[in-house]
Image 1 (tube, rainbow, N blue to C red):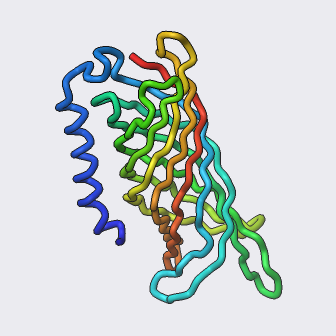
Image 2 (cartoon, helix red, strand yellow):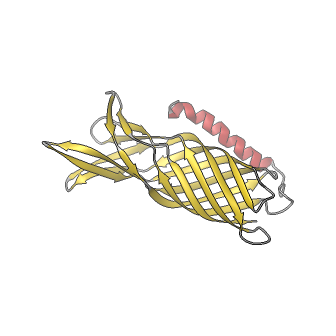
Image 3 (cartoon, rainbow, N blue to C red):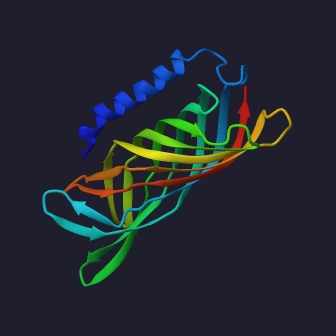
Length: 223
């Protein structure tokens, strides 16, 4: 399913999540502190291995490495076991490839800054425990910044990027740090099915299944 076909479905899912949050009575979870805000440091890894050159059918092998950044999300507990979660994060994983220049091959790399904006449903499996485990589906609007692939002095190519819409999943745990349950430690992993498409200033565009896996550790506060 390409990004244009995904957009109506993703928009509908996001609207459903928003309606659930807005329509739910205030303080539905345990009568108090239904909100939880989380701040985390994140590591983003891509599953990309090959770039498809659009219109030619050719492929180009690439490698990727982790990028680091920060994330913020806000969850509203609709009930004891169900929460609606909205989040944003930013990180810059690196991509690399080999470029043939005359008789030799040069390594080229670029940091690709990505900012997923997510909406999801968290199903809490152990709501009465100090270790509150949750999982659920999410939808993401992924903003990709323009980037420059550099192989050396005077050897670079700038690419403009297309934003993407993707679906994914979230798995995490909140660990209470105090007796009243206000402060928590959080660990979570997200996966997003997303495509990165880059267009050089002169030449054919390329695309790859970027499919980021996001691991985060941080702290939360209930209110």
